[in-house]
Figure: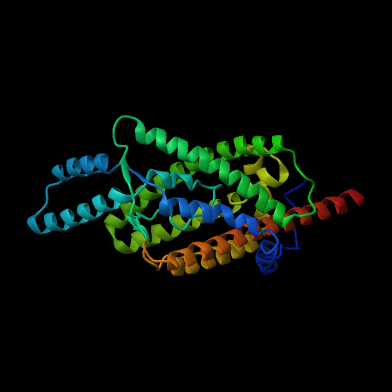
Length: 324
């Protein structure tokens, strides 16, 4: 299929968003994934690295030579970081990227719930924290693969049923895709961060310009790659084929895809501000967990609807080219 042609027909942005919420009403079981994950974060023990974090911060503090006024400020900042790591759990790695179950509480350092304080286990010694991160990440990716597959099915109810072997293959490719994207984002972000730091040290105005240019470049890469995981799930491609297909297929619809993802980010961001309002021990937090699950799941289904529109346009184009 030739992806390099100019395509006039565009995927439906608002219709896809509407179809996402509509399709969710018939597949409410999908809410069990984000709700279950957030309930785990709310009630499960916390696996922290507070001792390791405290040692690292104390050593860093001894290397910094500051004035007394600055020393007070840095002490307050370090105290805040220590408090954060005192309750931040390694189980937050269950929220994997780019494929994973969305969570309202993954990055929230929860100290207590409606029943009282949570048990805390420190995993700072040896390789315990590394093993914990690997185990939690593996479980999170498995759950994320199932969540993505069934969300894709909700968006395409008439699609051919896929055997369980396909899900296993997709999991392996999504694992590779996650590693590739994490490494790629690090390699891309590092030089931009250095450039931003350099220009910002010369002039705040130059730093702002460098930040704006860096953000535009990163967005131009992220937006086409966003649908790589969709290509793995929907088209059954391997990780590298999915990356190539996502870049080629979304490029003609870059403006449309930008608008679609912008609306998704705005909806998720604004609603998350509301869901995050209740305290850890407030019963209203359950309302936030449900609301977050409802919105994020509908948006994911909507993204599969949008990607299905892209595929349909290319299929129509292929049929037209073949006929001519």
